[in-house]
Image (cartoon, rainbow, N blue to C red; front, side, top):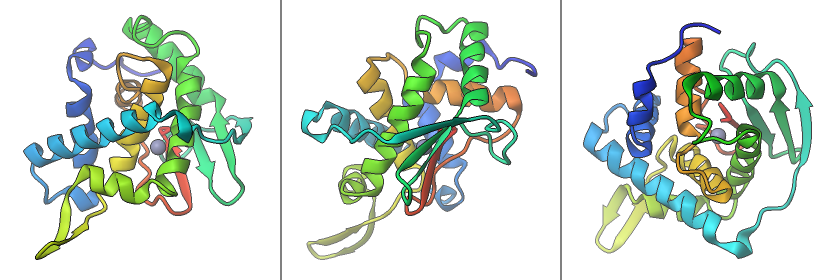
Length: 209
Ligand SMILES: [Zn+2]
């Protein structure tokens, strides 16, 4: 464990944390802070609405626990393989984040065990968002790529699915804050970037991300 991030990180709300995440993704650099805030808010609202839709309960995936999440180029809590339908859960990263929650004094925000539970739900959300809800997310985020009269083609906003997946997990667990706060703190503590699923097609991962 390196130096702890400032506790003031918790004062940055989820929309602003999400905007920071989006700003760090290459295809978003031309989008200004105000637009990124709007996109962040919409993506997280969509994640919560997906969680509220009871009928959309995702299927349970096979979970494989392993270590080595902190040793990867980009620290990873979990990742989902669409090909095998398996969620890999990196227990070293989970333990690191749980410890970090204690050290930051954030246990009231993230009860014991919630990091693991959130990582699993996050991957479930990626599964939904890469499949039948991919278009719905694009429409909900609502950033037009092309407008021809009444025809609108909605852009893929890289990172939107990541924010939606975090929001989905938070809602399902009844957390007051997005796990985005934990991943932001972990990235700062490790002085490394958070993993972001920028290519929803093959593999999604959450810092979990
Ligand atoms: Zn993710």
